[in-house]
Image (cartoon, rainbow, N blue to C red; front, side):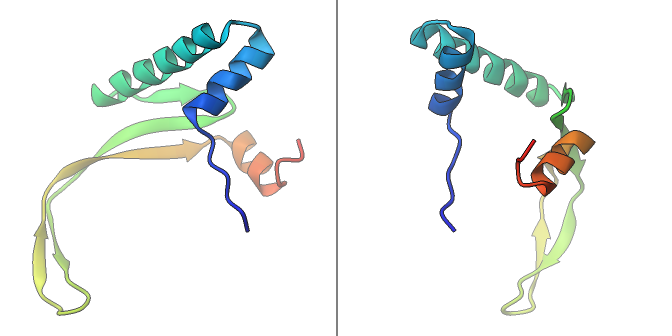
Amino acid sequence: MGEKTLTRMDLSEAVFREVGLSRNESAELVEAVLTHMSDALAEGEQVKISSFGTFSVRDKAARVGRNPKTGEEVPIQPRRVLTFRPSHLMKERVAAGNKA
């Protein structure tokens, strides 16, 4: 199965084709949106995109993990993780194989 990755360049090219901005303006727009989303998440805010999903940051507590090879207990530091919860429409679209 050949996997394709959607990149910033692909997004800016889509904006260029769909919206009609210049290539530079499209790239700047995509970059501005991604920066705004990143900044909001770094500040602990949720980013909700209608019909797509919700990005949020979750704090995970410190815990004791185990090395599966040796069985040795290893402390895992507390950290912040990014989570994504897709909307029902996105789940349905993915399940249908993007036929919508």
